[in-house]
Image (cartoon, rainbow, N blue to C red; front, top):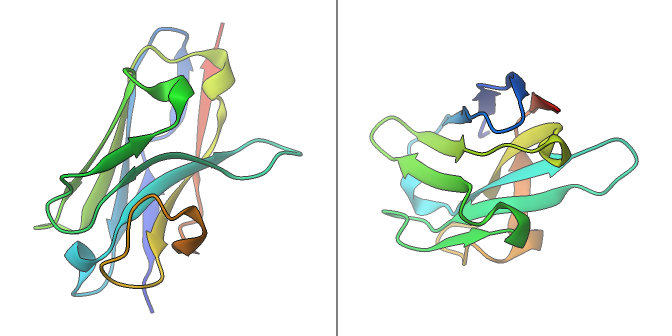
Length: 126
């Protein structure tokens, strides 16, 4: 069973930066597309960014975070990252790391993300 553990959340003022990390268990981390989702109370979980399996040459970003967030992965240590710059109050949410159920599937297939971490809180004050 794969386990995902997020870290790096916290409180930051608008315009600031945070870097989230997600450490995955298992021996085949590089075979899976990965993603970051976020959720606020009363709203659906929303895909923020995704990265393709392997070296991560493909990436997807939600329109509202393009140019501000960067997703990356380090397969040597089974870690997924989300570097967030120019944070806005509307970025406040619980951020979840997610892994696709099947190996070698496209990173933009939202419904294929079926394994989740427990989340890390990001709060952006104005």
